[in-house]
Figure 1 (cartoon, rainbow, N blue to C red):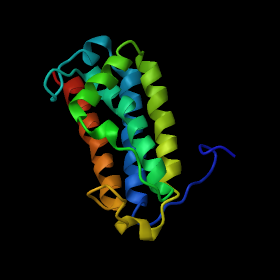
Figure 2 (cartoon, one colour):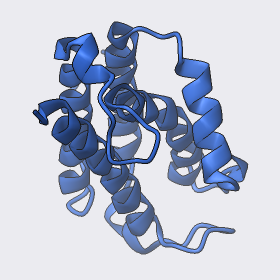
Figure 3 (tube, rainbow, N blue to C red):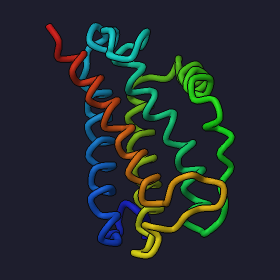
Length: 164
């Protein structure tokens, strides 16, 4: 049975984060599929970024998070080098996605969301306060923090797209 067919269950502390992750990726995918080229080209709150950039940023950043979350879920130590220079990483990710269509971005957001949810479903109650080696925050704060990342960029995209 695929992840999309299975009913995932989450530890109590993970459930609200999993719901938020799903909500934000669904909204970003909806925006990617529904906004006009003019709306996608509008400037967003992040200096120099457009609505399109905000959406592509979420889609292109998710694999970095998935690559870190997988080892954390397994009890290991992730490679955090992708996060050493956030601005450079963001620029690289956006450049790599510059020629992707919004349909591709929407598909990636949905696929990434399923991968993130599958990883989140493996977390247990005791993982919330687990301090991963080499990281300054417990796992609960890492999960919460990346969840706020998508919320921020979706809000930026939505507000700029709706501006008159």
